[in-house]
Length: 364
Image (tube, rainbow, N blue to C red; front, side, top):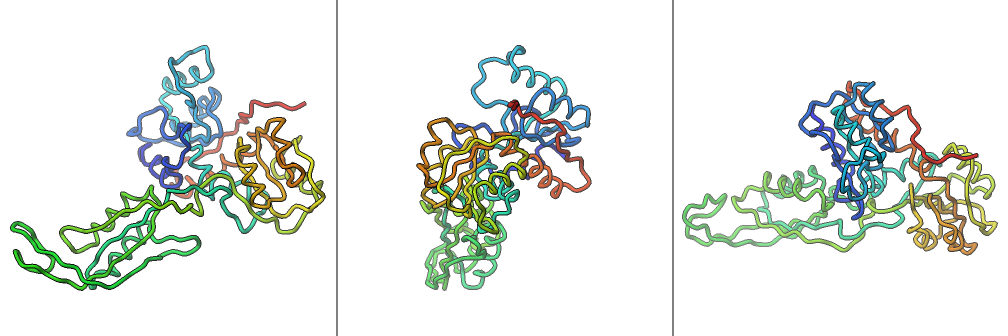
């Protein structure tokens, strides 16, 4: 199995097209065509992680945070990023980052946080728009089900909690085959009219190549007529943050204790809030201050995130509890999330979790 095979599976789970504009996901160093000897999953990539990968015979590190984040003008051996890159290249260890693209899928980083708190009725806090597209095609009556099934199998036709969704409308198509054509129906040089169905399906934009290939493979016509339209509708399962509901309402003190226990925190930073019990929980792994207003608008009782600045604690204005549990603390379970996902996809193959804690922040 090649490193490229691992990358392909990761990119089907969390497509690179979902990463934020400032991010740098994907294979950052290493040969994708090399045979993969094992995978080490981590949150960060440091020299210590590279040495651990070498010791465990893993020549691929899959991490949440990109080793190369901002632009690099030089690989400086006196800088930790440069030293780590040099070591990875020397040891033949590839490095792959799955960052904000994994943040932006509902079962990704935020889903792992929600699991720790037992949240139900989960929804994306800030769904992304323009990630949904619609395909229109025209199919002879005899092949409507065949084409529809192929599109569904390729990932089209999902609307919320429903799948195999489509719209169909009967009509009549006309065409004339020119010399050299090989028409499925009709004769060369004669106009032909055929009972057809207009078939419409939604699909995620990142699946476009797969969906179009499925259409062309299943459609009987030599020339397949279809339209692709970008929609402004928000995608219900793609976007930033998450909101869900606790099994039972909790008083603020009890909720804070639960967060400390669930995430192994020694300390929490939090704002003042009303005495309303906590039931609706909004959260975002990592630096999530940009979603405070979204959490307020969603009527969350608490917003749980990290890297909050002093003045941002004023923003809820007693309408919502605001909790900063720490960046590493909020995302630490991403390591297990990646490891379990890959282990399910690649049975009897070494997919390991790091034993190192890479949190650079200490508490006293």
